[in-house]
Image (cartoon, rainbow, N blue to C red; front, side, top):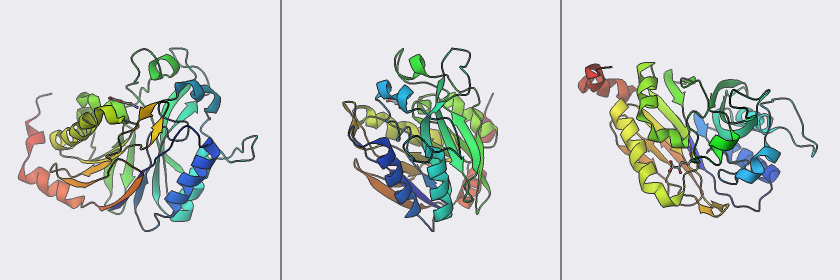
Length: 274
Ligand SMILES: NC(=O)CCC(=O)C(=O)O
């Protein structure tokens, strides 16, 4: 499986519509890959909480905004179709149809689009980052931890999670117990804690004998320098590719068949005591 990891950089000045157009062009340039992934909350910015409510969008493949631009999901669906790729479009600030149990109308929502541009998986971030401000103050927590997507050509099962989720190993153990072979993780993880990002991603791959494809953000916004260092880690724990700190696209061949071989050679998952 050929994967493109688009480590997008952005700052506070680029209007959202321009960033969406720029990301769509980057996706189109990845024709020939099987899977393309973008980071967390890149359209609305990962850390500028004050802008989220004004920029939030419903998940909508049809609508055109007042500015004449298509919805973000529609723009990404078009890019996926143009490139002929399975596209994990990262996450956006979703405006929910109705407030959830905690009274919030927003969610940090990831969408995966098929090469035909149809949504095939949706994941709402389960562990909200912000310690009382930001996500927990403004967003509902996701309640569905097992969002899955079939990967072609090998037919492996990928499961979705987002950024801060990486700190909660029980989520990934649950996913592997439900059949996950690949973890797809978009993020907006700051440079200040980038050592944790690298190590936790590798740990989640090793302890679950899964491939990890983790796409971080670059640039600086709302005063936070983002850390980059997107990575693709094999089920053996080998780092197949790692980005630097700036904008970069990783293009990686991932041998999914090797995961089955490795799980047979070293059957640690069989020794789980749940
Ligand atoms: N966007 C996030 O979830 C940030 C997570 C983070 O900075 C951390 O876990 O550290």
